[in-house]
Image (tube, rainbow, N blue to C red; front, side, top):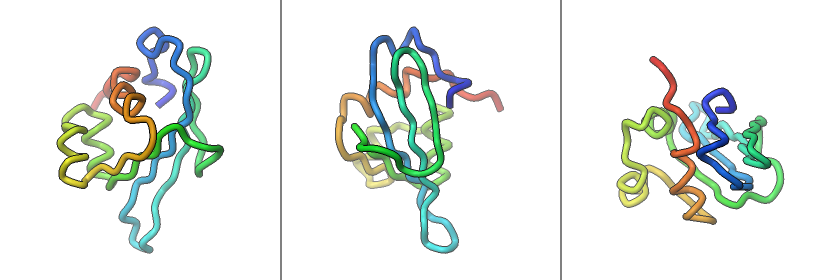
Length: 102
């Protein structure tokens, strides 16, 4: 995510996000913390600190979101994407990143 982050699009946004990719064979989730601060994006494994927004989805839905091939609003309405916290930050985050190349 830091490699695809575009600071000029994020502007002065500061925030902590928790991501959970659910559906592991053991029933658990892969968890990440993504922070935006002072024009940078950093990631770390696990959930660290108090999040401004938390997102939970399957790995397939995560790929749909980051490649911009899925509609996050529709995913929320159908329960494929669960969002808690700052909905404005959640809605704007996709604009902060370029899509990864295949």
